[in-house]
Amino acid sequence: MTEEHARPEAFTLAVCAEMVFRSLPVTDRLKRITELGFVAEIWDWTKHDIPALARSGATFSSMTGYVTGTLADDDGANELIRTARLSIPVAKEIGCPRLNLHGTGLDGQGLPVVRSDGVTGAMWLKARDTLNRIADLGEEEGVTFVLENLNEAVDHPKTPFAKAADTIALVSAIDRPSLKLNLDLYHAQIGEGNLIELCRQALPFIGEIQVADVPGRKEPGTGEINYPAIARALNVMGYSGVIGLEAWPSEDDELALSRFRQAFTL
Ligand SMILES: O=C(O)C(=O)CO
Picture (cartoon, rainbow, N blue to C red):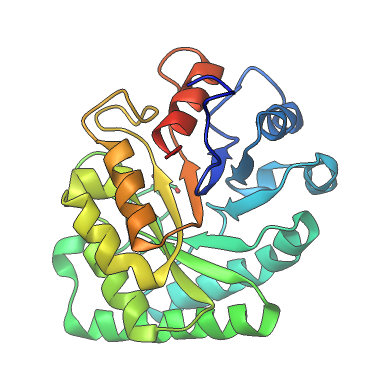
């Protein structure tokens, strides 16, 4: 679509700075992302020079990766709160409104500390208590935590509370503005499919949506997901928030970003 024919975007489009323009230093990636009209996501903040991020001129949508721990046991929950507390001043310094959480943590060997097939009723109740503690912290500090769904089949084997249905169940049970969903449609397509209906069920609890195509986690338009149809459905449902690209460019980075924009320009 040419500039003259492009219509105003119905969503705020974000790009993960860890996955594009990777030959450049991260601050230059952020500048490029900003020049192209996107907001930005970063991963583990401990890997970055925070004042440089703050000076980069980028608008940040979310941070992911450092808030680690587990939802369903005491030590893991304390670790989650500890890493969340350390992340909050950083989020404030760079003006980032959302901090991402996952349903599990990894042990020293990088393995999930809890197996998905071992999730018990008591663990669900404990996960709910942990997320209520996280929501308390978000409320006190004026930040939003977002719980992301993952896929077990390809990227995150044996992760408890991985499915979008699990994250919707937990976040809706808590039902507080400081704890929302990061609805990742790439992970959901692998794990569950039925994406438009999933968006409809998740809608009241969505803090942000993330996207990539399947297979390969590349930009929209390279695989099996009909993102233009999802964009139209989200618009009809009244969603006008952040759509974040968390994808590896299939060829050229700018081409990937323009395909992303095109998929979500109504
Ligand atoms: O770890 C992943 O796969 C993610 O989607 C992070 O947001």
